[in-house]
Length: 193
Image (cartoon, rainbow, N blue to C red; front, side):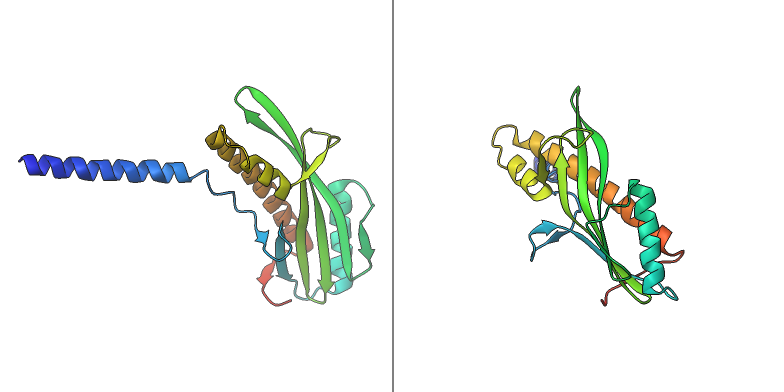
């Protein structure tokens, strides 16, 4: 009977240790933002089939979408029917305890066009710590590296970093989804550029 209690206690201790370890690991992962090991930048890349759509049609639709979404017609690159690059942004407030911290996320949105397909890239993701984007900007890579350098309050910093990067990821995935909906009614991911 005593051995059975010891075994039960041992199994329970193992289960509790595993659960504690699992929950502790949740915030160690830094969201799902794709990282390009070649450029050393966080970058979303998607190749999308657009059957029966010419380069010209895709270019025109992308240009209309960016004009509507960002309320301007200023582009970083505007190479008709070939490439369109715009600056995008969105804002959110991160709630740290009772302190709201506003962020504006700024990114490059790049389209490359070919007949019946296009390539979508979101890169050069930067953070500004106010809702107007008027303070200093930090690249997402520098922001992550800086926050990971803290030794005191490391668990709090990891949790905050995970939550901020998750918010960025969700917003950028929403942008990608909006673009796909606008470009064609039925998008199909492609792996061959």
